Image 1 (cartoon, one colour):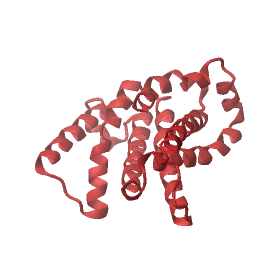
Image 2 (cartoon, rainbow, N blue to C red):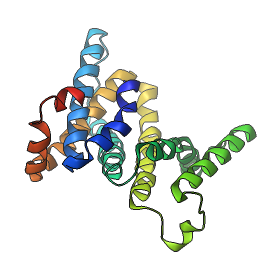
Image 3 (cartoon, one colour):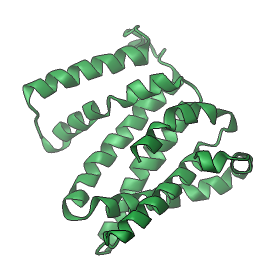
Length: 209
């Protein structure tokens, strides 16, 4: 699965010509759901104690992880380079720690703060192409800006998933979060049907996704 998600950056650049991020993410979410679902089922970890609150929680994960993070990631890759996106994506732990502190007042060790500061500085340099003043004059690229929103989405996913992962099997939570992401994005593949059709009728595309 790590390899699958790591391919998002070069894959996103290659598929940018189709202008169909909703279809790309929906298909990948469905593939991940099926794969993880089979593994979870074989291990007896697929079932969850369903309730309206649990469904809402999984929908939140699907929204943050796929509608925000993955969708904006592929949208951003239509406007910036893959390696730039990968570096910005590496700042997710920074956003997680900041949100954890703001929302729950959770603190981290000093050495962790130092590491976070270095990570943030690196992401800042990449986003602004070395011109930090660009943060204040509105000249940050559109793609880089989308990536910043995208990583916030994944940070929210990470924080929101924590309570579920403490009570349920990780495979089950991830499987159903993938399904929720697919269900949320599927209608948009129909709204933008021409782009979706052009993408999915291309030989070999689904296999690559």
